[in-house]
Length: 256
Image 1 (cartoon, rainbow, N blue to C red):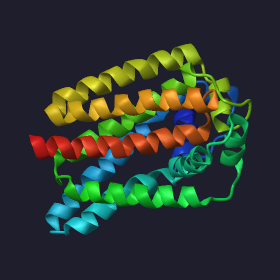
Image 2 (image 1 turned 45 degrees about the vertical axis):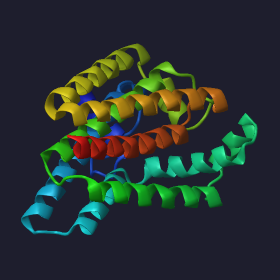
Image 3 (image 1 turned 180 degrees about the vertical axis):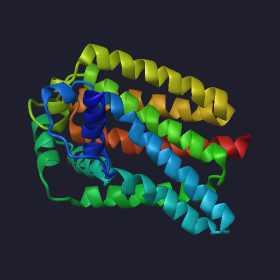
Image 4 (image 1 turned 30 degrees about the vertical axis):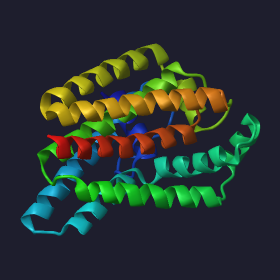
């Protein structure tokens, strides 16, 4: 039980700003840390559900509702995925060779395309959030979708090669019990896919399709342009996946 709690603490301390006890990272508690990553998405989904409830009870307007939906995930994660998204935007916009792209992502300075990408991302996310219904279905689809995306991100770290022999993704992938963690994450992803379809109907099925397409596109881009995955690319995938899931949800709510 102690190792399990430490494993959860390792994942939450890195991938969120949720207060957890400080633990020293070691080979034992990092072996299955990837398995706890999806539950950061679960916490975000619960907070989005609470935010929707407060907006309905207090008659909060659509713009503030949309702003909350756009900013809550960043507040929970501390922007770690957004940082990777911005770095990847700079690298992709360079149209450079693989090694140069990896060097650009490592640079701590934000380039013009990182800023442009972040602005466009939040404008789109805010606009879509304002169109989403403030009910149980929205929180359910976004919460399950965020869990699914993180399960797929963890699965990528277990199944896909790393683009370099250093960095956060390499450290976690190298320490992970890849076979056991990969099986758990694959089973969890399948369960989440079923729950999306059963509990949210057609809108949930569209969210599932969006998450799957995001993962397939990410896999092709990572392997084709970078030769593998990195922590920044993982962040790019999570952010792109979240906005695509939200877009799919809004589409489903408009149609059905």
